[in-house]
Length: 486
Image 1: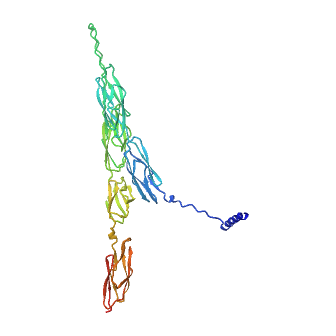
Image 2 (image 1 turned 120 degrees about the horizontal axis):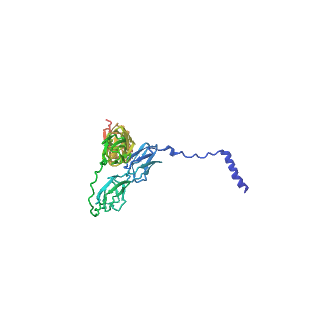
Image 3 (image 1 turned 135 degrees about the vertical axis):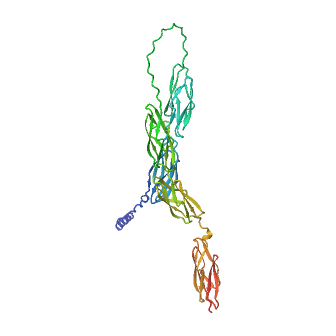
């Protein structure tokens, strides 16, 4: 037993002394560091109307993009090395903002979309009602997807509807005032208040016993006439505004008497107001977003006046606008011509066209690659703004064309002594070939194969007369002429 215990210990000591230090295996190379991926931008703010956007990707490795949010759709999202992810963001019909994410490789792009502007303007802001009552109209103005509520605080006021959506006309019914006092109330529509004033009923004069006539009254002293009621008239300057694709901040001026109230509303979401209204004269600031599309027009309604806003658009052209490609594919480029302030990005409609570099501002270059085609002819497009590049690719060669052999040389002259010769066979890589026919005085050392190769043959020594024969390979002939002894 002791020997059995000592022997392993001795072996262990021997191994330690003989081997010294044993090196442990090193950890594997950090591959993820070599495939580091960067995004530009890493976060994006999107207006409520959504649109198409792009993010530049830089990585030495292959990458792809995906989004779990239904309102973000990837239009082009894979590549290798430097490229572009393009994606579309749907409209946000809700007044609240929302956040979504696009996963690109190991990085996350944060997409924040603001909610719809749901401010409501009403007209009129005050209603005067006769004692008999009647029916009146209240007009609301807001974005089409915005929902609002309406309420009347008195039973003698009846609204045709208690809620609505977008711009509408609401009917108001006011009952007769049978009391001796005038009455006042307010109607709320969203956060706007409408004042309602109804005059009182006039009671018949009471019966009185006639009295003797009174002595003539002294003439009343002259009275100062009451000042006329204030008239609210409004002017707005300017009546129109033209601006570049960059947009920016602008100002309109309202001129009105000091006590006159006015409101403002914009017809488009790309126009934002600095205030919803005011009193008397003063400025109103508004902001216009940048425009990456065609020319557009919007309306600002301020104090019942109209300010027309016209913003220049971007136009894009590409040269060449079409590209023919062989079945082998290849690398190509087109020049983009655009205004200096116009941003653009290129996206492919098909998977077999890859954008190499495809975004910029003003004039630039789009480069792209087309993969080899192993099927029928095909057509794809690269979209750049309102322009596009049409790419037409030839079909793959037919098998019959690929397997058609070419022989070299086409003729061979041989002396009467004979000898060994060869024929070079050129054909597609998967195509079989063989010698179909040859004269009896020619023997073969190599007479069949697959793909390009050689036919090796020997010509026997000739006789007195010259002779000619043909070697047939897959239907193609090489003529062999041998001289005679004469």
